[in-house]
Image 1 (tube, rainbow, N blue to C red):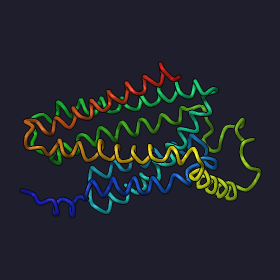
Image 2: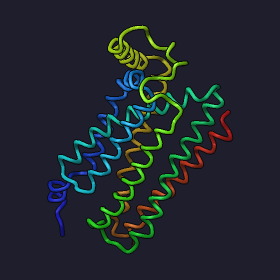
Image 3: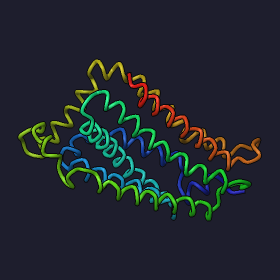
Image 4: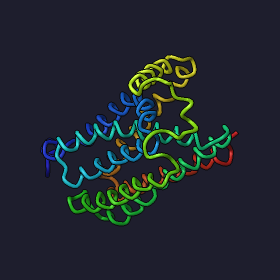
Length: 258
């Protein structure tokens, strides 16, 4: 009985929110290496994680302005976080084999986040026709607490609070921070035009469409289905199976990295 236009005007459109995240994410990736080189791994990850927490908190009292602003900030944070995590993981892995193993372990652990939240949804949303304000507040309060705890764990990493580890300082240019950042930005665009990256591009583009489908379009379709007896609960079931698939995929990298 509630019109979609009214919901979008009062609370914001989820598809627009996620579009903002990934457009900003895409653009910010070019600047991410330079930011990491200036702030260091730990500081970058801590600040970036805070943008995820802020985005989650916006759903406790959603308005279009609040949601879309935190979406843009989350897009910036996502680019910096993934770059810092990848670089940090690389520095902790002495060989290519260890890098494959550690990436697989990292990915499998991350995919475990699909299990807990979706198991909660399967049981808690069972029999519900739609997600009301109370249900929304409960799930995002839990997610906010978990996100804050996870963000704090970055402080336990063996890395300096600001700046890269001493043993990696030799890799940096002996120029000013600003010049170093500009060089990093230029190198990011150069990398985009290399043969290996151009060959890799179709797979990355496909992955973008795939990610958009299984994390946004598909769960929304399932949750709004009139043919499923427990559509809201089924959203959690879809997410649970997605997580299991991700864990299995990560395990393949760990045990079959060749």
